[in-house]
Length: 114
Ligand code: SF4
Image (cartoon, rainbow, N blue to C red; front, top):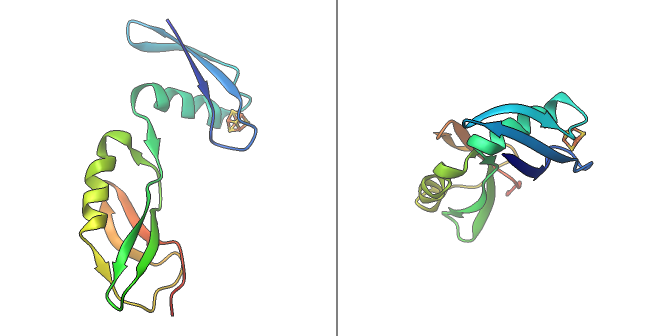
């Protein structure tokens, strides 16, 4: 069995073919670097994405946030639930940790708010 993917690890967007047999990866073709091979292997069995959202600010408005690393797609709904229940106080700088260790990722600020 073959699975066709587009690598999203860099702007090159290589088309990758993953060869599967008995639910195991037996080959990866089309990648031009090791990062692409790792992406393809993970994408087949445990796809991950960076989650972006907003957290309420106690002074009003919202703060754009994102996970500091990709999280498993199967955990994304639970991650969003934690983010939706959070509230933070300004001042906040870009990159500040807003919520620690949510399914293995920190939720960080994507904006500076004075
Ligand atoms: S395989 Fe490598 S070069 Fe190609 S898109 Fe993925 S990261 Fe970029």
